[in-house]
Length: 133
Image 1 (cartoon, rainbow, N blue to C red):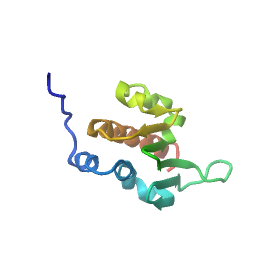
Image 2: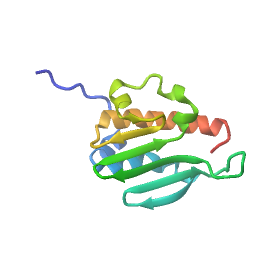
Image 3: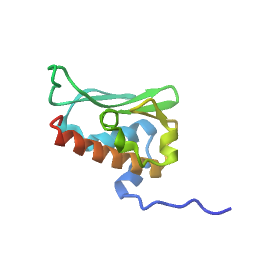
């Protein structure tokens, strides 16, 4: 049996990967907290909108992490608005998708966390570029 290939994980992702799934997924969004309006930040429920309202004047959803039984749901709106952010995701991360902007996790893999962190960076940059953040 060959050993599983290890990715070159950043120390931050490695540390996050050792936490519970909800805490780790929430941790991926915390670096952007100053650009977000956090609506809920409770155990099992993190919900954040963009600081700037949409064209209709209503709040714009950005991301959420929710625990539902054994599953941990990660919603990320930039991938809905820019589906090309998902063009090159791994088959393993694609299997975690439910719908257009939600990922389901029952356990975490640091390699998938690193990949998801990259999508968050790209999606956040895209939102900044169009003035949503």
